[in-house]
Structures are given as structure tokens and as C-alpha cells.
Length: 333
Image (cartoon, rainbow, N blue to C red; front, side, top):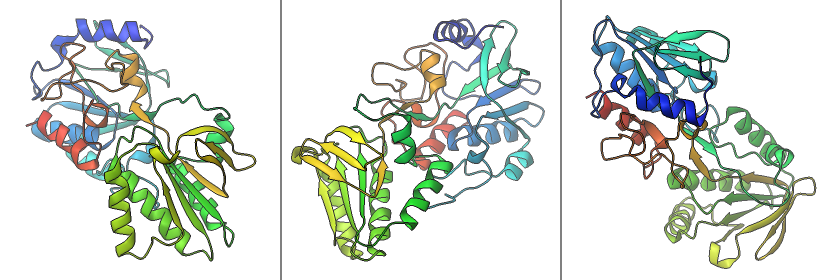
């Protein structure tokens, strides 16, 4: 059983290309076994649709984070939607859901090794790797800082921590939202800024500063319009890239952020990191220098023949719940 390294999984994808449909559309034979990795909106929908299309086929949906399943809306104001299909709905469709993580793939034998020590047999392996935060070279931005200043960008635990911090915001407190130079989901970023503005409006004398490194004037304009209509534009300062929003160093213990425009001190910081394709996609050699998976118009990888990528990990994809589901619908059409 090979370990899941960039080399082993890349070679596996090349030698196992026949196991994946050569076109974007995938249909199973009645006795085939499909293993779908990743239970985000794309993976969950693909698994359910494949199972419904071929009742005799075996479809297993593998996910390491159980919080991504079982609800179709965010549990808190700072969470993104989960799979959009409950455990009951997946089960009713004929999908077997397993909470585990792939550690190795034996393509010749058609088996995936799991973190639990078990293994799963498959005839088709479908990847919906999702996204992960990208490391940044910012002084002071270590594991402690990331804990103190939760991104809450798809993490339930971080979302609840951010909620608790905002609930304890003192009168005349200062909240800072940091948006990176590369914003993978502008609509989510806009929603986050508006949500924080509402929280600030509920606290006497509190204020919000948005450090927007993206340089996207459309995002700042959309916020200004929406905040104005909702009466949320008071005590909000939006600092764009051309105004010195770039973060140079941080000190989470003292609540300090050093920017190109000077030092900012905050009580609560929602520090959003740039995103890239999930770790599995990187290990498989499916990503390019951008950190995303380049694909053609039908979601087929342009780096490894025969590989099909679903959901947000695709380079140039609109990273939204609807777009992720659309990629699964196109695969199973």
C-alpha cells in the first residue's frame, strides 16, 4: 500500500486513468464501486446523484470532518453552508458515508488506505478536495495568532470562537477584518464585512476597520452601497490596498497589526487567509503555481490525464455553493 505522496498519487492517477471517465460525464455500471473523497456541496451531490442513477452500484462518500455533513445552512453567522445534503438524504439516496481520511492509494488493487487503518475498494475515485488556507510570510503570524484571530472561513470551531469574541466586545471596542490580496470568494467576503458591521452597530461606540489588500474597488463599492442601505456605514473604515492595507507584521497578544499605513490596535480580529486547493489536490500533483487545479471547460484536469476535479478547487471557478453543486451536476449529467 503506497503512502499518499505527490509522487505516488500522481503516478496512481496516471496509471489509473481508465478508472475515471475520459469525459466530464460519469456514469457507473451496476456492480461498480465509486469512492467520492470530500463531502462539500460538490462531492455530496455527486455521490447522491451517482447512487440514484445506478441503484446496484456501491457509492461511498468519504469525509474527514463530520461537521460538513448533516445541515444545509450555516450553524453560525460566520460559517459557510455545509454539504447541502443531510445524512438522512444521503442514506436515502443509497450513499454510504464514512468519516475518515485517505492516507494512501493502491491503484492496481483499487484500494484506498485510510487514517483509521481500514481500506476501501473502488473502481472509480472522484476528487472534491475543497480549499485550504495558504501559508503567509507575515512576522508574528504563527499558530497562536491564527487561534487568537480566527478566520472562521469554513471552520465551525473558529466560527464559534469568533462569535464568542464578538459577544464579549466592550463598548467602544475595535473590530478588524483582514481580507487578503487574493479573495477566492468575493461574495462571501462581502457578506462577512456586512455581518461584522451589524455586530459593531449593536455595541455602543464600537467601530470596524476593514483591511482590504485585494485592490478590488468593486468589493468596496458593493459594501458601501449595501451598508448605506442598511444603515451600517457608521463607524466603519474601509482601507484599500492603495491606502496601505497590506499587513506587514502582527502581535495577537497585544492586539496589534502593523500595516503599510501604520499600526492598528484591535479588540477582535477576523484574519482571513488566502485560499488554495485542498491538501489532497496538492499531494496529487493536480495544482499549478497558483495553488489551484487547472481544468478545462468540463472540469477535467489539464495536469493529469483522466482526473476530474469537482467544486472549489478548480482554478478560475466561482467559489460559491451554487457553482460547486453545478460542477457535480455536470459530471453526472
